[in-house]
Length: 235
Ligand SMILES: Nc1ncnc2c1ncn2[C@@H]1O[C@H](COP(=O)(O)OP(=O)(O)OP(=O)(O)O)[C@@H](O)[C@H]1O
Ligand SMILES: [Mg+2]
Image 1 (cartoon, rainbow, N blue to C red):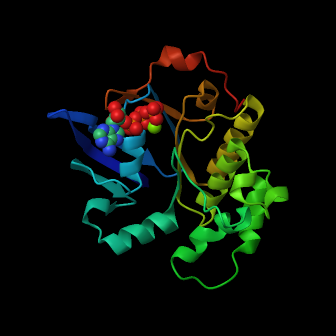
Image 2: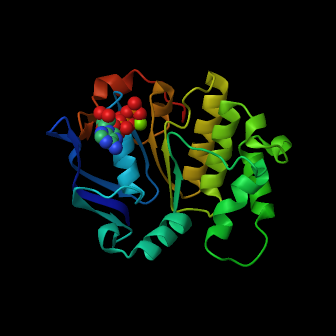
């Protein structure tokens, strides 16, 4: 089963009177259960691509099929429901709801589309998974950057999404915390969730089964030589 099918996807911005291709005719297919990493220099279009894949940003041209559904043809309500229920997204610059506790921040997606039941059990489980259960009752301002990032990962997993998409989830984490996050992604992936991450951390590459490189808006398979130098954490 194909989870994501992207055809000739482009995003153009106007820059000083010129058209600038932030994402340039990207085609990509991700099978359900895959773990894909995207690397690339700053400004190469990685976040722009992820924002389109998660339905937050409208492409200039091209199409995105999520599990066979054309996102571009979906009414706004259906798109936001699909995003909330089936896509877990950890954007690059995320912000927490500052007057909600950590636990409530994690539970939030559960309540976005009226649901029955108590989400606390799952939120507690996820906070434990990311190693933050002891901070459940704290407020975001009381957390470090790395701790907050883990809260966002737990939040993205709240509705048990089909795919977890994360934009530099280990940025500004120390190596040990970064490794814990990657181990977590690996476990989530082994449990059946498709994972797509953008990363600068070369360590992360050992976890994925496919590494792609973004360069000036274009996506290509990363050089094998570069990948071979990366330790394989799965061994
Ligand atoms: N709203 C916008 N309007 C104009 N240009 C934009 C806009 N958003 C992004 N860009 C430009 O598009 C290019 C790609 O940006 P993007 O954020 O996707 O890069 P990135 O690969 O995620 O970089 P980084 O590694 O620094 O996060 C950049 O040159 C950026 O300046
Ligand atoms: Mg980015």
